[in-house]
Amino acid sequence: MWRHPSENFSVSNIRYFSRHKGEVNCCAFSPDCQILLTCCDDGRLYLWNAKSAKHLATVSGHSGPVKSCVFSSDGQLFASASHDRTVRIWSRSSTKCTQILTAHSGSVETVSFSPDGQWLVSGGWDNRALIWRVQSGEMLEDLRGHTAAVQSSAFSSDSRCVATGSWDRTVRVWKLHEEKEAVTLQGHLGNVACVCFSVSGMLASGSWDGTVRVWLPMRHTCLFILGGFERVWVRSLAFSRDGLVLASTAEGDMVRIWDVTTGVCLKRLQGHKDSAYGCVFTPDGKLLTSGSEQLDVDEDEENSAEERSERWRNLHTEQDGKDDGLQLE
Image (cartoon, rainbow, N blue to C red; front, side, top):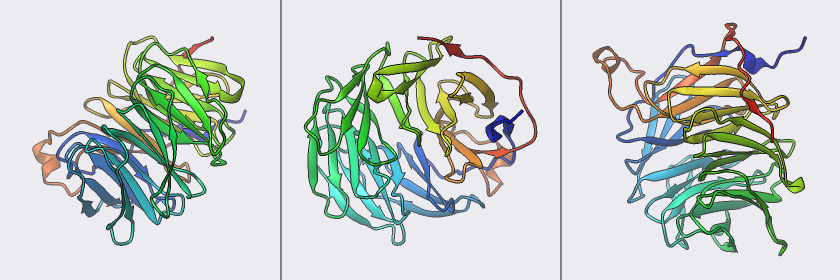
C-alpha cells in the first residue's frame, strides 16, 4: 500500500537558530532551500544558512515587532509586515530595503507574494487587505469587507485569487482584478489566524477555536474539520508541495501532520519546550521547520553553535501510530 513520505517524519537532527531576542512569529524558506528567513518581536529579520544553521545576516529597519515574512517565488526578494504599520520589500542579495509600503493605518499582520511574483497582499488591524504591484510599490486594490482585523493571507497557485482570514471569524476569497463579491466562508467560532492554498486549489484555515477547516472555496464547501478536541489557538498551517498533507501548529509543543484526503492525523511531532508558532515545508518537501517562543537556553546549548528557536523536522524511518482527528461537517 502506498504511503505518503510525511508519514515518516519524526523529530531528528534538531538544529537551533538562536539570535532572536523575542518571539519568533514566522519563518520561510527560499525557493532553492538554501536560506531560512525568520522574523521576530524584536523588530528584526534574520537570514540563516538552512543546512548549517549559520547566521548570515540580521536585517533592521522596522520600528516595531515583525509579524510576517515571505520570499518571492524567484527568491530574489523577501517581504515583511510589521506592527509599525508598514510593509517592506528587501533585496535578498544586498539585504537592503527596496520599497516601503505605507497605506495601512494599523499594525500589519500578514504579507504574501503571488506565485507569479507580480503582486503582494498585506492585511492588518485596519480590517483591510491591500494588493500591491511588487515592481513599483503601487497599491492596486483595497479589499474591504472584513469587519475585524485581517490576520492571515495566501495566494492561490495560479495567482488569480487571494484568501484572507480575519478576527471576524470568516475567510474571504477574492478574485483579483475583478469587481465580483468575495466568497465568504463561515463556520469558525474564533479568530482565523492562518490560511493556505494547496496546489490543487483546496484552502485550509486555522482558528482560535482549535480547529482546522479544509475547504473547496469556490463551492463554499467544507470538506473536513480537523482537531477541535482541545480549545487551543491554531497558529500556522502549511501544505506539502503535492498538496496531500497539511502541517499545523497550535498552542502547546506539538506539530501535527494531516492527510487531507481522509482527515486523519498521520503524525504528531513533539520537540518544542513551549508553544510552536509557525511551520513551513521546504519547497522540495523533504523538511519541515517550526518556530516557538522559547528563549531560555541551557548551559550546554549556550556553548553550542547551534542553539534556540526554530527546529528542523527531518525525514526518518521511525513511524508513530496514527490519530484520527476527523470531524465531519
